[in-house]
Amino acid sequence: MSKIQIKELAFVFHPVTDIARARKFYEGLLGLKVGLQVEFSPGQWWIEYDIAGQALSVTNVAPPGSKPQASVFLEVADLDAALASVRSAGAVIAQDIKEFPPCRMFVVRDPDGNEIGLHQRKAKA
Image 1: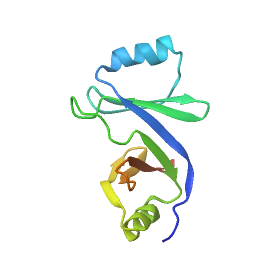
Image 2: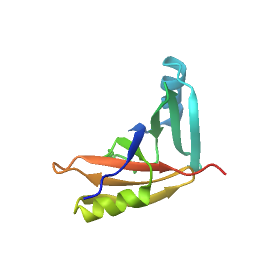
Image 3: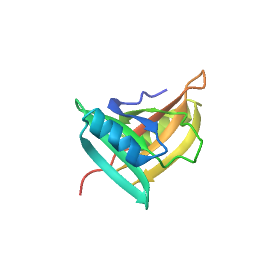
């Protein structure tokens, strides 16, 4: 079994239902600064707050009433190689690769069923 090269913690995220209310809390009350924000479609947001070089993300993109299974994502050096390693190890892939403007990611289950996201930022053009 080949080892996946983990580079760093990519992000931790929380689902939110109301972006304006979440921004008031995270930016207004906590004083966090936006590091990245992407509006996938009107009113559907992904916002990352930079905290000492780590990202705390909030999103309202998840289906209503759903709770994410993976809330921790690890940055990998090569997402395709990581996926190949996970497959060759016979681990359960909970969510295949998804593409987003700034990144790509997939979710794997550990032997106890906990889900961990593996993530790779895209090169900046």
